[in-house]
Image (tube, rainbow, N blue to C red):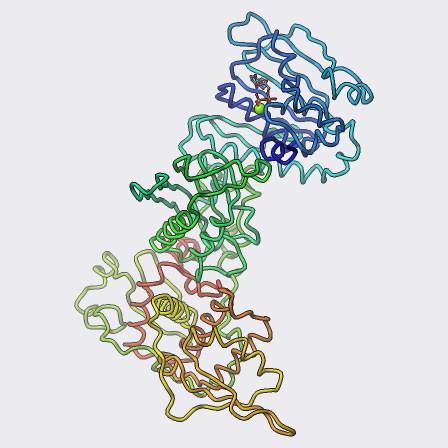
Length: 640
Ligand code: ADP
Ligand code: MG
């Protein structure tokens, strides 16, 4: 009984829940504009004004009266009214824990009226159970629509009030709730005024894209990628079908938590782990795996395929076929990422045209602003801080591969014939005059390897600087992942097993790693059991062919893998563990900083970049390339 009430009801537990209830009522009343005012993050005052149908004077008392008597008997305690909430009784619940005034004028009415709840704490407590609150009604002037003011939330219930966080935190939650509502209703205008300052102003009749940009922060536009999917798998029982539209942020604006992901299913803001996971999967290899992409995703599907009423407070959904939703979202986001050119520019994106040198747009935008150093205009062209502040990717490796250093020599790339025109000094270029080259540049022309670590190349937007190790590591990562997924990771049996000594304690670690080793095609077993004064020895019988080709030493590889497992406490069954190992394999198989590349190798690497690398970060999330656009160059040389 109580459980079903919780499942069905709405929850008044903090200012944000009041904002949500009041705004939803305004939307129900057909409002085209909704204005929310907050004082002290809503703990002192929440006021929602709409231009909806209004409430006739005679019905004002009904709005704050709990109509369904069966529910009221369980609400003897005001604290419980606050925590449980009730379907169809949001206003009554709010009126029992705060001072409420409703001023309204119905469309047909000549004048409006204002209802105010009267009474002190004791009075509220006494009346909550039976008769409902005492109120006064007086005539009031005002436009058609409703203005509801909620003051001193939980004033009668100090226990509840104590649970409120600082006004700043509560304000943030109210803003979040309003953003969700605004994204779900792009046709409605929304404004938020907090402590007398307007922090959100969204005009009515926006397109979904315009609304999403306005809510996420217009200055992020260069960092947002549009995602689409329209999947209708036909007559599957239950009418399986899904339409997806969304914006996802580039890795540069990824966040430490998933809180900057907005998900909407059939018009309702929800949280869903399957979708969160699908997003993460789509960004796999493009982003530091501990970070979460920024996203706003709007999903429409047949109502039978989804239950959004699982828990209104947490707004979780239950999909009939969550595997289907997962795969559609993952594929759509992945496709969009591959199509996008994620190469970061050296000076960062240009400021939005509306705010040429403004210190920052509204607070709404700032809350969503990217990590320091991105999404920001250079403050002084002369010193070009964006460029020089940017961390230079370290050419070093995450693990210590001392044992491999000597084994790894150049020539790790397949020696394919280079496509003409992509190599410096290539004959194709000589045939072109210099003017022609400027007018019709090759995708990546005129490659130069500098300090045996970076590649400089020209493309149609400017100059691209590539970290050769990071890029090749990323290429390897994609290759290994693809082969693992398709079961095509070939293994080579060793004629003479490679051996390595391990510590006694590492034997157990090795047996834990067995399933993981099997998946990547490493066959290893202890041969000499430990005895007094004897070190256990492990023999490697088989090893992935491509690592072999890259001259990766099997014994060193296994030792590093055991060390990694120890350092990270990897559990072999976890996907994460496999990912770590693929990372490690990619890193080992890749060319290193310090490797001199031959022209055909350079050409091949750039060709591979075209294939995998519209996206531009290595598996560890560091950038693989940075672009210095022509505009950047003009700024650096004070031409603009
Ligand atoms: P519910 O929305 O589930 O009906 P509420 O307690 O939220 O329950 O609201 C009670 C009633 O008050 C609504 O059914 C509606 O008739 C009226 N009401 C509340 N807010 C507004 C508003 N902003 N405009 C018009 N009517 C409203
Ligand atoms: Mg309501």
